Length: 345
Image 1 (tube, one colour):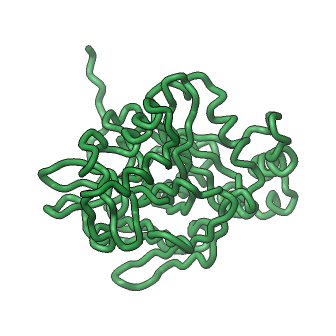
Image 2 (cartoon, rainbow, N blue to C red):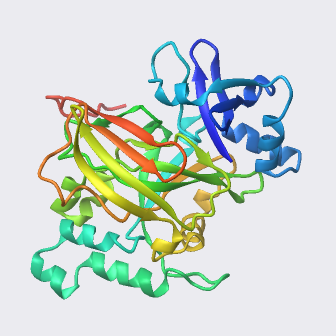
């Protein structure tokens, strides 16, 4: 089952279920369901399963539908219906965006290219190599046991969240942009403080690898960028394997083609359960009503394989082997000539 969030300009937000080439507009039969999490809250209140409530609502008589292809092609900001991120919240402060790195079996090579001299790569003594080896050894513990912690980073609040066909800003202070084609875990904390997984979505964990390359201690600020999630919430995905393909276009020409990208637990050194445990073990990540969007890492980046830098108008396509692609255009933001001056209260 695939769920989308969209908006009809002048009429407000909607949530829908994809049914072939159409979207069943659940809001047309449940006017208080404006977001995916509203459906979850209704399921929790009525003691139903989230996906069962979605399926039952999509079959109600009189439900309105939209052409899915048209929704996927519509740009935001106009006067036609357009898609939002697959999961969000009305209060963007309650959306917490995070991620884990060095989780994939091919990720250590990309990271080493950023952080090490050739001699260090050959010796395997970089911090990235050590962290990766820890994951190989203890990232998939037996059920009920806590494994080794993966690398973790904070990406921002819901103010950094973008959807399908939304632009991703390239700040003037950034050294470069960098696509990261990933799976995103989408969670809400229920009324008892228990993390509840709604499903998974495609994500572009837009970062600044050139800044990170200066020194790996710059990883934290290099991650404070916008990111894209969607267009679909995959409710029934088992997280075992997904084949992706990432392409970057400039002026209609392909300037980067990733080839096949493999993600999911089969291609990771950390299990889903271990990543989730280490994220939600902190009490501040289990506050009722918060929404968590967690990026699970990628096996390959264009950075380290290209000579060009991202520029205004570049278009990034993340293409799954099934379901809809995630498409975003880069928007360069000029650097201000002024520094940020903090004023006394």
